[in-house]
Image (cartoon, rainbow, N blue to C red):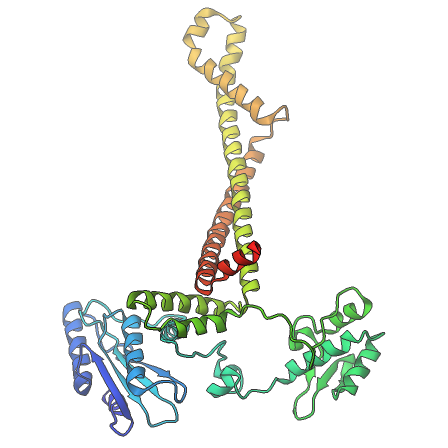
Length: 449
């Protein structure tokens, strides 16, 4: 642990340092002291598992100073540990980019618990770091890809600053252009691709692959490779007229109507929100609201206002539809349970009524069994009302129906709770976006005109 801390505190690398509940120079001893106290108080071995944890947080070159980066790291550590664990933050400036090394104890400072890493902690930590960076108007990596799942890209490539379209993206553009020219059949379509510079490779079993100059590996012609809507079946449907063709990219023509790009607009508003005309509390509140909305939009792939509005409306409709379906199932379940209760009461009191008939409706018999006879009449009336003249089902069938309805109600209730949560989240995000971007005001003015 000391060797790891010494690396972080290397003066040749260090640009700034801060700490919480410990001194960075003696942090290794202070961490172990807390562990000894924990072991003495709980009789649990503190040395088992990780002694401490490290977080590395990097920033693009030229975007932030070492002091600002250190403050971001401190805030990240404080919000991640909730102030329950000792930590210190070392900001390094020896690389081409500024980055933080955050070290925190695995044992709580009050000796009440040990930190346990959990499934999905990497995602949770990245999400927290992104939220804090957005609140401070810093850039983040959008749609990050794990190193093990693809070629490593530096920060400029992540943001797309120096990234050329991939082979699959270029192929999709060429396919859209060819289909817009209405080829007569698939061979004509393939000829158009070859004329556009695409090498069509015929494999075994009639499998086709496409390859562009400058690329080593071809891309197989299937929707799972090129994307939904670009497989052989999709292309054949467009050629035969069963599906509409996508519009071809326009070069040098009039630009399409600009949609509201929430990511760009929110970032611009975040920068504007730092003006002197805002009170500190209002500025911080707006930044946090915009950061939350931006993070939600990026995580859900909602890059324009129309998509957000459509998804919100869909979520609201789905929640309302599930609520109606749930009410209908609950009504059916209540009706079935009521019918079963009435049938049971009817079966229990029917012999009493038969005896009443045998006694020729004797007043003495009525006085002795009046309560049972009232229950019989009420049960019979309920059965007639619930069935509406239909034949009375067997009790086993009613029990089976009640079990099925109870299971369906349980599943629908869980689905409705999730749909309700999704609806509330989308409605809240859209409401914040409308307020922060002034969309509602612009729409009102347009309607007034």
